[in-house]
Each structure stands twice: as C-alpha cells, then as structure tokens.
Amino acid sequence: FRNVRKSGIAAIVLKEEDELIEVKLTDGNRNIFIATANGQCMRFNEKDVRSMGRVSMGVRGVSLREGDRVIGMQTDAEGGLALMVTENGLGKRTKLEEFTPHHRGGKGMICYKINEKTGKLVGFKTVDDDCDIMMVTTGGIIIRIHAKDVSIQGRSASGVKVMNITEDVKVAGITAVEAEEETETDEEE
Image (cartoon, rainbow, N blue to C red):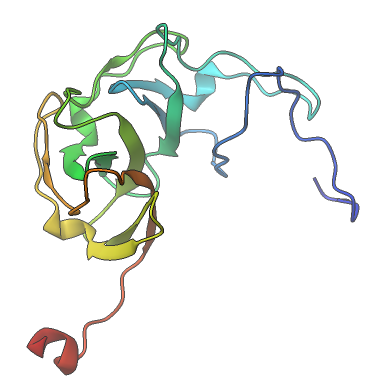
C-alpha cells in the first residue's frame, strides 16, 4: 500500500456476492469482534489470521447462518464496550469481557436479543465514555448522542430506546465520532 496509484490498487479479492464493510489498522495483538444482523458476535485474536498478500481472499472470520449478514467489525483498541443499535432505534453497551474468545470461523455467541420489537442489528462499534455516536435513518435524519448515555446491559438484553423513529423509517447505520465539548449554552438547552 506504499505506492498507491491514482486509479487505486487491489486490496482484497471478493466473491461476487461479498462486499468489504470495514478495515482497521492493528498492531498484530488485538481482539477482533465481528457482529451480524441477527445478533451474533464472534471474538477471536488477530493472530488466528495469517498474513497474506493484497490479492488474496483471506480467511473466514465468522460462519453465517441462513439469511444472516455481517454488519460490523471492530477491535478492542477503540474502547472497552461494544455499542450496538438496531433498526428500530434500540441500543445498548456491553462490556467486551462478556464476549468469550473463540477461534475464528465459528458462529459466535449472542450479542443482542433480536425480536420483532428490536428489529435487526444495524450497528456495532467499540467505544469508551469519551466518544459520541451518530445515527442516520432511512429517511435521512441524523442524530448525535453521547455513548455514555446508552445504558450498559448484558449480551442477551434487548436494549433501550436510543432514537425515536416512525413506522416507515428505520435506523440505517451508526458511526462513532470524537465527543464534542459541551458549552454553557448546550447545558442550558
């Protein structure tokens, strides 16, 4: 990746039905967390993934059940809590210690209790108390909240309301951003 051309260079080979959703720079000793829309999470050490060239397909991180898909990949470098949000606006934070490490390629363990009320999982970010979360809906509405304002719950909990949405709108995605400093006018509002 040192000599990238204007037209780019190949970074990975993908099957026709696959897409690249997340890339992280690591130090070789991190824990990797891969979350799926149906509320499963796989935790493994990155040492389980051997180093490969740019034009390889890589190895399987998580085995997906029928109808499931990967919605996020994080490392433990960004924080000690996993913040998850569902398409129906529910969310929670869970301590990373609650996710037992496994060898890559397994089905993982439950990270979110998915049901009709919650909808599918759409966002999974590792956070600490010093960051904010931005959420965007399918209707184009964006909100920003402090990560510390989302309650800490266990792996199989359903979460709490973190965004109000209407019947025909869903949360489309989330991202973690640096927290803004509050001013006196923010506190008054």
